[in-house]
Amino acid sequence: MNVAERMRHFNVPGVSVCYFDEFEIQWVKCFGTLEAGTDKAVTEDSIFHACSISKMITSLCVLRLVRNGDLDLYKDVNEYLVSWKIPDNGFTKERKITLAHLLSHQAGFYDCDGSFAPYKKGEGIPKPIDILMGTTRYNPEEVKAVYVPGTDCNYSDAGYCVIAQILEDVFGESIPQIAERLVFEPLGLSRTFFWEIGKDKHEGINASECAAGHDKNGEIVEEIRACYPNTEGAALWTTPSDLALITIDIIKSYQGSSGNILSHDMGKLMLTPFGCDENAGMGVFLENDSYGSPYFFSQGWGVGMQCKLRAYYKNKNGVIVMTNSEPGMEQDESLVGEIIEYVCKNHVI
Image 1 (cartoon, rainbow, N blue to C red):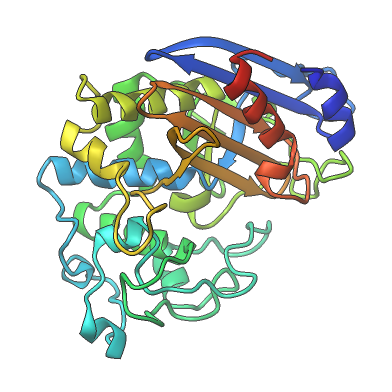
Image 2 (image 1 turned 180 degrees about the vertical axis):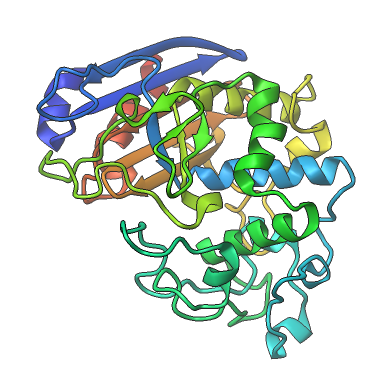
């Protein structure tokens, strides 16, 4: 595949790709620059914004806590919430909202138009409860059910904000703290973290080591490296290699091997359709390719960045593509999708 030519076609400054098979990373290939107009080459250690892939990590944290017996996936979440509670109405009286509903985007929520935009410098830093109560521009309405939970699937950042508040109320810890303890440290990940608003770096990792965001014309975006107030749903920064190690661990659990994070039961639950949508797993989505082979995927698209992972959990292989470009089109139509399709067919680029 002529990656350089396709990068020029899509105005993408930098790309990093990782392919794994049989629980092992087989290769990592990097192209272009971290920031347009500079000579900062993309390397295996280059860190990209994973955007909504953050939700997969948050789901892993919850499922690990369920595995430990600290949380119940099917309990009314208002029994966990202390600082704020989901308002009762006719929809929640018919069926209570559970963590399983929240993880699978079936809690009865619709996100407001324009909600969950990136943080702007100079604004106050909102807490999850501020977003839930609808007192900020990031989510101008209080979060509440607008249909019976479990009867429809609607992608919802608000649902993951509820999860963050549950973890704060029950354990007194934020998602970055819990993820570091339950996911990143056990897997030995040194290039993966949740970038919290107001922090210039993370434990020795400077912003200059992280990809700058670019628009569809290849120009650096105003935010350069966008931060989002909904940390649990959009603030993950990582490398394709680290994402591959996380994905491999999920597949090991599903296969019944020795996963570090999840038990076999939790791994199978994560990758099994839940509720009313056959494509909804716990924090990931499920599909079959054109040959009928099942895979799960998680993807991110934020200001200046786009990425996607596809993992064949029965074949034990997969690919992760991360770019520092916002192409103005869905992943499957962009360079990200082109690379994934090529690698899945040829295992090389």
